[in-house]
Image 1 (cartoon, rainbow, N blue to C red):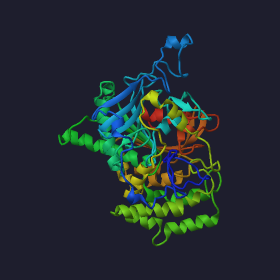
Image 2: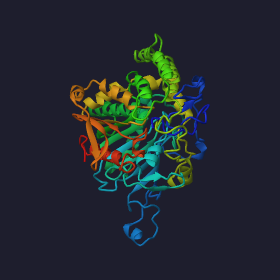
Image 3: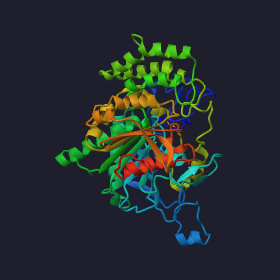
Image 4: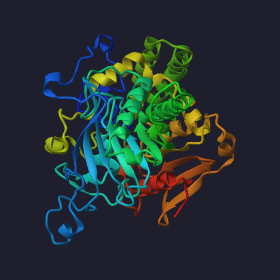
Length: 502
């Protein structure tokens, strides 16, 4: 989700959906009145943890969400914690940026040819939401059961053909802990780059540095993905020029799912989707009319976002988030789940993962209680107005740099709906934009089954996935299995290919 599921909310009405995006005073993506008074404190006692600044602290082969059993052990019915690929390497732990800032990671080697397989990084959104959401609810080697009590083997895991590294960031998110210093996507990018420098210098993971690197993200990842990718490219250039010391990162792919990238282009999509989507209207015409007035009035949402784009201060951009989400995003959802509109609130799917993660935390080396979303991190971003800042220029620069890029969106998601995302894509100005505009949508099939509609233009692709909510890999459509369509999309893009039907 842009806004994976939230364990810390402010004024959460029982009827509203819980997800990656916090609900503040009853408003999805709202802004707390106290954001400028948030104390940025360490979230774990420094005395409780012995850190190793500039290095990793790792638990290997924990057997959680996969196992390190040998094939013969499994064949003889001995200890196989899960029905999963035997012998697949996994590691979890912390990269210590400083003595008071530790970023959590969980790595899974590819089920096939891990030494040569590409490495995919996964980031959930929020801002402030844990990437364990993507791991356990979406596309990891194991998936949470509907009763939230255990996990099962995922045959469509993204580590079938790729090494996958799930990262909780910024500091304070999920199992990460320490001083909360990050309040913008750019600051987050710098910390992710530092973490990756630590990761690739470690002897256990240095062999993956030469492999193709990919960034995949969702929801607020519409900011994270383009910003992180552009930052990596700029650091690579600075390393080549001799102005920065570090390891060059072999970035080849960017994937953004259901992402918030260009609010000015995307906010009109809430009005369109609320009244006319593939499922049912979400609210009455009168609510849509009021929202449209809030969008277009002289000091309405559109004007406030524009003011933010035009060099607006933190307070200007923060006020735009507050106004637009109070008057457009939140009211237009009605009583439907903002992450999957076919269902009413509250929708129990995808199942909660808090209890399961708590049960395995000590085994995998986690040092703090897991939170779906860290409210203080979210508030730090709300205070800077980062939500309403435009990440499309970064996305354009990444596409123009030749990085294979895909934007994808589930057609049952309201909170970052396809109307807004497709408007964002249509407004991009890249080397492939003219070609993209000339293309007609093509039907996308998986094993001969209808799954969506897509366009390819050069190394850029876009796909609207049928039947999927905010977390696209968590859903199924027609006779396809859960995550099957998302796995084909991922595999094709990671192989350096444009989308194609099978």
